[in-house]
Amino acid sequence: MANALVTVPSTARRGEIIEIKTLVSHNMETGYRRTDRGASIPRDIVRLFVCTYNGVEIFSAELHPAISANPYFAFSTVATESGTIEFQWKGDNGFAVSSSARITVT
Amino acid sequence: MIRKTTRRKFLAEAALLAAAAGLPSGASAQATSNLLRGTEKDMLAAITRFTGAKAVTKGRVRLDVPPLVDNGNTVAISVAVESPMSETDHVKAVGIFSERNPEPVILVCKLGPRAGHANVATRVRLADTQTLVAVAQMSDGTFWSGSAPTVVTIASCLEDI
View (cartoon, each protein chain N blue to C red):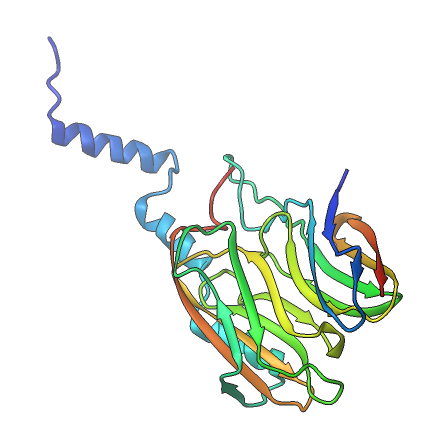
């Protein structure tokens, strides 16, 4: 149902700063909108995004309704060792998506 | 015999009908939209909560927001903090705050020495023409801020389905 897209370079030199881009498919319903009949549409957003590198947290974000639909983040990290970079999104109504990428550090 | 209806009479009757039907008049619609707008005071209160009432110095933080936004639903913004990002001197957290959105906090993110450099980009919703503020918490406990003004032509948050 929900999809995540992550961009991580597959190889990097040790100590190099790499850029990570992530996108997750989600409406991010603010809770401020109403239907044409005036009924309030309940809030349904992604609340938390966490990125870990071989199990160690390197970036996290607390999301609010002001984040656009399909939350996008671009950040960086130092390529320290080969391994897995994991991404997790958690939100309202049990929303949970994870994704991972392999990186080879030479 | 045909009853004559003047334009003035027709308008008065139409207004009465609209009021009876409970349609929102211009004034009440305006009041609703004002309720959903934050103020500078709300934003400053949110920044105080983020910093724990510590002093915030201007500088070291660059917030990039397009000066003119056509569509407030998706605005690409980025924050860059001047920091060596070493074990002893790095950015711990960055908060982005809005003056006029219904909620003053846009995003709070945590980073550390492993980030390499303190750059974060995302996409946000903006409800009105306003100034955004980014505040960075350093590992030595100080807080630094940068701001950027923007003009928004189509607001986010308030549209109906």
